[in-house]
Image (tube, rainbow over all chains, first blue to last red; front, side, top):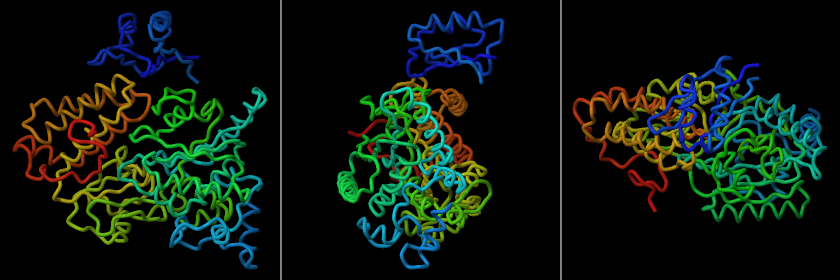
Length: 67
Length: 448
């Protein structure tokens, strides 16, 4: 069961925590909003992905289970 | 379907109406019919007929609001979600929303259908409600259309007295704005929130109005459902031709440089050239066609003539059916200026919720304005390309993706124009009044 990151763009306020914590998969656009690398999160990055999700002050970062 | 056979046999006996043999199917000549005359023309509403959803699936009806999603599949999903939800909650029932707000500026077909065949739409609401197990119905309309709302309110009362509504139907006025009639925005408004798109999931079919599974269908789609329920899938498919799913008829709005602009009901798959001849031909030399509205795409005129008016046909050519909008752009207009105009309009239509849309669309519109009207920095084209990839897919609704697709298609169709502007500056045609409608928009801002 793979997992993918997704942003709720309405909730996101560009605090940038996820970009700091998971630069391997999340980069900033010119306005500071996160751009997520497409595809499932590689297994070795899952702990960091969970940390980024937990750190988001607006709960805008989601770790979805892929179907 | 037994209903269809019964109505054909009944028609021969003179007691039931015959199905319309050709076109028009949806909009009868003359004014709107009172309920009794409407039933006289089309036959009684076939309530309690089993298998309507299967019949709609067999008909291959697709949504006429813009996304061309299979209507039967949507109905089945809501029916199943309603079935699952019912045991869990005190009072059950799905909700049906007929979307008639028609916020696509160049489209007029939903308003025309509602004003000329209100009971066909209301039949569709009642039948769809019965099929998906709904206990409430809503009809969303553009809130500025007071006359239309009053006319529909009268038609709903008329049906109430005749016991033809099946569920209570309430009219909801949707405020102006390109995204206010997007389906999650309508649901948000019905739930007492702002008329703005929401983040999905949950999707309306899972948890929509009043947290109930909700079927949101365009009003024209529901009018087709009312006819399929009476005359069957076989009759529906007598019109429409390939490639791909292109069954039945559709209402299209033709405007711009044509002799007789207006709403036409066509068999899907009709070539664009034949439709333009039907609309009296070009009124002045045309250069391109915008198909599908502002989430659609541009086609060079000569190349467009053989393209079938259907979602698969238009998609193969790089546009879309959308809500059935076709605008002919005359040679006397500048395609680049029109694109900058509409990109600016769409930027003002943002609900202001998603960062990439709030920041990206005005930046994109500003760059296009430079490309069209200014002496652009030589990097402006590259920046534009970069912005197109930055905004696409990054909003809660499709406003950023749709805007990016519209601009991408324009830059391909008007590539020569872009090059001429880059080397020689703005052409003389940028001075003319824009052909494409942008209600409530003045260059660079919302007009108050």
